[in-house]
Length: 385
Image (cartoon, rainbow, N blue to C red):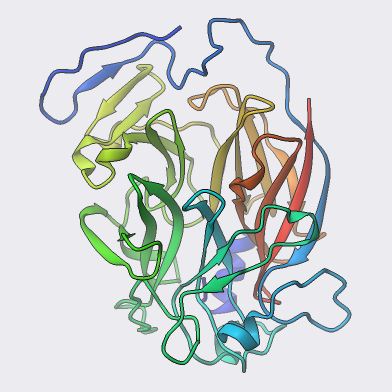
């Protein structure tokens, strides 16, 4: 994500129940006494808190190391793909063992790091690019195998962004989440109008039917500029794609939706969790209630099979940190916030995208961005009850 540093840095600080569902109109209510149950839900589970034992930065993922930087750096994206400065790093599993990594606003070889405004010191602006990786051993860093490139071998833009910096048009298109459903890859994104106030034109979805090489807009999925799902995270489990969303920006509470994999392009069939009624409500996103109270920015979430816990990570501006929470059930109750990384240790940090390669063990790997290097780094957290 790129904008004036003065605007953006201020933002930075500042047993099951089976139900027969008959065809009906939008706003159908889907009762579910124990939503998002795990298979062992017939047993009463002890509500143990999930704790963070240790957090460390393992490696740089993109760009060229800065002077005196000591992190491993297994990729040469600057020379190989003309990716000298970039951010985000939204990871999802495409084919088994192959991962896509969506990156945000990207600049080329002439990019100069450690500036107040990276956009003023970068060339070959692309609003987003896509990398691929088959690396599952993340202890020594995350290796990029390839990127989607143009005829010159440079990483190319996939979701169209207008690059109109007037604040009244199409500034850029920023990916927020990605998932594979029914053999098709999807990316949720927002289209930015003006970074001042984080004003968007809309949020939407693109899809790829050729393993990420080409993408087209899904005309049937659209979220308004004030939607509770202007930014999102996805996770697939038990035939559903679950979506946690927020308003665009970093100042709203998270809300929950779900849809069957086959219905991902039919927004009228999306179901929204209402905590007060303890029901899924179809077709009306305004019925979604807060999962918990906090200021939530860029987020991702996943289910850890070892701990049998849902885990959400997100940037929290008011605490100037990357936060983690956990829950036995996706609908809650969610734990109190725990700190994964602080702005004191990692100045101008943001983004926190879980890597799905290791969700059956003690380690949580996630990608985090740093503003002044304006690049992506691989983080590791050791978890325990």
